Structures are given as C-alpha cells and as structure tokens.
Amino acid sequence: MAVDLSHHLSVETKARLANPMKTIWRLAQGKLKAGAITLANGDPHPSLFPLSRVDFHIPDVSVDDPVEAWRHGDYQEQILSTTVSGSSPLALRTAMQYCAGKGTTELCNTLQELNLVLHTDVPQNNVIFPGDNFLAEEFSYPGITNSPLCHGLNWVPVPIDSDGIVPDALDHLLETWDSAVQGRRPHVLYCIPVGQNPTGGTLPMERRRKIYELAQKWDIVIIEDDPYYFLQFDHLPSQEPHTNGVNGLNGVNGHSKQKKWIDHFAPSFLSLDVDGRVLRIDTVSKVIAPGMRLGWITCSELFHRHLESLTDSSTQHPHGWGQIFLSELFRQPPHGWGPDGFLRWCEHLAIEYKRKRDLMITEVRTGLGDDWGTFADCDVPAGGMFVWLRVNVEQHPNFASDLTASDSLLPQTNTAYLMNELFQSCLNNGVIVMPAATFAIQHQFRRPDETHMLDVRSCPVLLKREADDRAQKSNFLRLSFGGTDDAIVKGSSILVETLRKFFAPIETRLTDEEQV
Image (cartoon, rainbow, N blue to C red; front, side):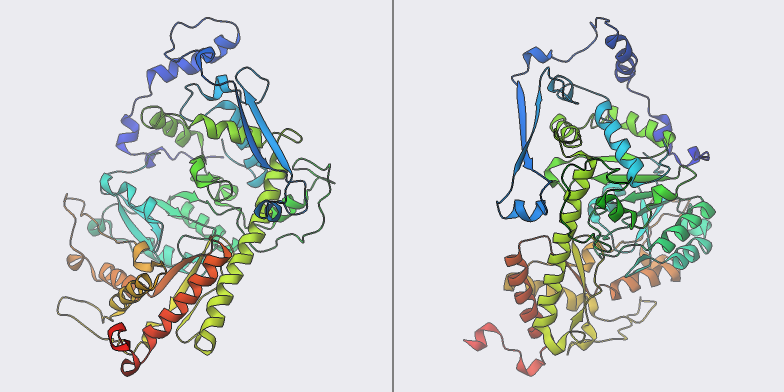
C-alpha cells in the first residue's frame, strides 16, 4: 500500500494551481462522447486540418533478424496508417488536437499495458525546495543534472563502482549527514540503473533491493531514469528461427521468447516499489529514434496529479505525431508490431549493440596489445551504449602526486591536468571522446540560514575530500559504440595511437614541427 509522501512536494508544487481550462476539458470528455455540443473549445475542427492520411513505413519484425535485415536493405516492409476519421487507435482528428498534459488516453492505456508486462505491481513533479539536496551518481548525465540548478538545487554525489551505486556508501552518506551545516538531508535520488551514462554500469538485483530498502529507511524518493532498459546484453535469447503467427506478449504457453528475455532483467525500482516512492522515466529515444522526443513517467497518483498540473501550465501535451506512431506501432499484427514485436525489435537491437560493444573493446585492446591494462583498460558494460575507458595516468611520465597546496585539505595529483591534455590530443588527432570531468557532480550547498553558495574550501573536511576524490577519479573517457563499424574501427585506431604518444617517454616524444 502506498504511503503518504506529500511532504516531499515543494512549496512551488503545492502552490501551483490546476489549469482551469484543462480541468473543464477533462470533465467534458464524457459529455462529448454522449453527444454534447461544445462551444468552449479553442481548437480548429479536424475538417480544417490539411491532412487526410499518414503512413509510417517500418520493418516487418516477423523475419528472423529484423535489425540485420533493416541495416542491409534486405527487408520486408510494414505500413502503419492513420486517417482523420478512420478506425485506427489514434486517428488524426484526435492525435493532432489539444489534449491533456499527460498525453492521449489511447496511448497512456497502451503504455500502461506494456508497463504491467515489464514491471510487476506498477502503482497507479516537482519536489525541489530552494537549497534542497538531491542525490545522484558521482558521475552522471549533465543534461539532467544541470537543469534544476537554477532552482537552487544542490547535487550530492553518491560513490559508484563498475556495478553502479554502492549501497553501503549511500547509507554512510545519509547516516553522517549534518543538517545543521549541510542543510536538509537529501530526500530524492536520481539514478540511471541500466547502462549508466557515462559509466555503463548496470545495478545488480541485490543492490537494487538494498537501495530501495535504504530509500524506505531514509524516506527517499527515487527517480529511475532508464533510457537503456531495452539495451541489456546478458541472457540474450539464442537466435533461433522466429515462429510466424505467434503474436502478443503471451506467445506460446504464456511466454514469448522476448518475454523470457526480459524476465532475466534485474527488477526495476518500479517493480520493487510498495510505497509509491518511485518515479520511473521511460523513452523510445534509444530504440526507435531520439527525434521522437517522446517518453513517459510512471508514478503514484500523488506525483501524477502534480506532474500533469505542471505540464498543463507549461510545456502542454506531447506532440501528436509521436503519439500516433506509438499507438499504431503497438497495435497487434497485422496492423502493427504489437508489444511482442516491439520487444523482438529491441532484442535484436541489443544483439547488435552487444556486437558493437565487443568490436570497440577488441579494437582498443588489440591495438594496445601488451599495453592493455598498463595504459588503459575497462570493465565490460552489461548494457547501454558506452565504454568507460580507464586511463592509468599514474603511468604517464609527468604524473605527479602529493601536490598539497596551501589551501588544500588532501594530497593532490595532476590527474585533471593530464586528462585535459589527453582530451586535447584526441581532438587534435581527429577523434572526439567525452572526458570524465564532463559528468562529475559538483557538490555545493547553502547553510540553512544563508542564501549564497559556500566556497568548497569553507566546507567541512568530508565535502572537500569528496571533491578531491572526484578530481582524482577523472581518469576516464566515455566512448560511445553507437556509431557505424567503420567509425568504431577508425576512431579506436586513432585513440590507440593517441594513447601511445600520450604515455611515451619524454625523450621520444617529438612535436609535429620536429618530425618535419
């Protein structure tokens, strides 16, 4: 049973009024279906849309390997169609009109059915107070972590390893939190549990359960951002021939091959949630196309109500084209892919990304030869799109440690300087990589009685140590294996040569001018 979590809502959220026009619109839907006439709306009539029909040409997923066939142009085509007044699940007359901030009822129902398959026991924002402290993995996606800073949010980095968040470190951080000095104890955790961006780590089942238990212990709301959920590489089904005519998520004997695949996934935080403290974010950006700009949030009624109110008075509803496409895509064959066809596509995407992952690691490992493990190495990611390449800067001829400055509390190294030098060299040599510093969470905070940010040097020793630790942990590069095989091979080759020059003894390193 869900617990009362309304104390997590910010003052801004509690004060936000529902859009009165949207409230009337929702009330009117039942009356309109019963034949009522509306003189209240401000939307053009569908008869004035300069549209009559939209066709989406997509691959037929009934073939043995739809991704491979699609890549090589040897595919059968399926057409999804919708018209202004047709009988499709989401006709143009509905999809291209104004609707509620949460999206159309048709698509919401479809995604709810998908959620019930992927995440068992699914329950049916805005939680930021100025000066609030939120938790995030110590290296995380800046597209998200930067956005709430203007609202006065302070991010608190949580230590991670190759498997993601370390539960004992999270518990220690909260146990030793000093509210008198550091402000309100963090009450929200933002995390990317699969193929974490940038590190590629995937949280194992036992860690997820422990983290959820800690969320209950410390009254934490979990924002589970899972764009790489369908790109998990462990337990991929054997590529046995596809059996035509078996459609739907129940498949044969109650289980399709794709359902057996996702049954091996570690349970999502949403699946573990019994309190209503998880907000799960899903998207099709990584498995259909980023330009769809369409995702969905699954959460408790408390958060849903306020999220919808926020959307109704800000960004408004999702775009109609994406809602049409997904509504048609999830129709059962022969009209669409159906959920089982969608999972089949995702399964073969995961197979393809796993192949690309292996190609990249092999190219870098083979290129470095005996220097793999000395100059650089990596853990093999179990999902996502990224390799987190560890650069062993302590092997660099100019590496220096114990550079304790007068205003520093801990011994320092020149890791950040050397990694910037490596990044510039990569850029100059024609390969673009993402340095770890791009993703490092910077922890600043306000005292409860102050409005200005404190300089890190005036923070407690613990916080200074955290900042120094992240600087020393910046000896990583994020490499994406989302490109073509040619880009992976050529880019890896340039990176290998750049690493060799980077680690070469000083006397053997010649500038381009000297070589000429």
